Length: 146
Ligand code: CA2
Image 1 (cartoon, helix red, strand yellow):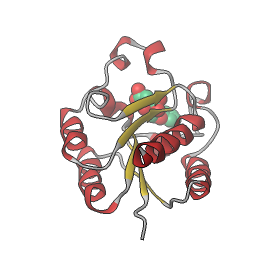
Image 2 (cartoon, rainbow, N blue to C red; image 1 turned 90 degrees about the vertical axis):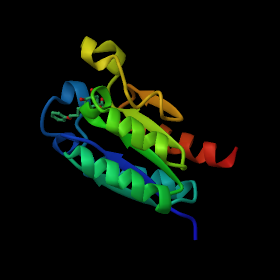
Image 3 (tube, protein in one colour; image 1 turned 180 degrees about the vertical axis):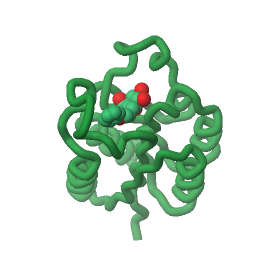
């Protein structure tokens, strides 16, 4: 059995669609989940889609992914810019990890310009809204096939 692609979402992403649509768009996280499931299905994969507001939970899910996932697509939310622990967890696991962001973080406040995750991830896709996730899934599958 092919292992699923884990799609992990960090803090406050459960609020998508309710506030700041000019930054994050109008889609809810449920909408994104459905679109990711359809994209992954087209590519022959199932997804395991999760969101947590807690750093340690995200770390536990990365450890879980090390055993149970083919690849990981992660939007670490604001932990992107703060978390050495998430960096270490991404480095510690075998499956390819693709970092995604809805917004173009490089074009926003200075504190969003540095990612602790980028140096540990296979690559980063930022600024394309929903398409960042869909491109992240494509990149994950591509890195499994090369
Ligand atoms: O652009 C992204 O995907 C981010 O990872 C989103 C994070 C932000 O801290 C990163 O710098 C970039 C924030 C997610 C919070 O989402 C909200 C949604 C609705 C209302 C308020 C926040």
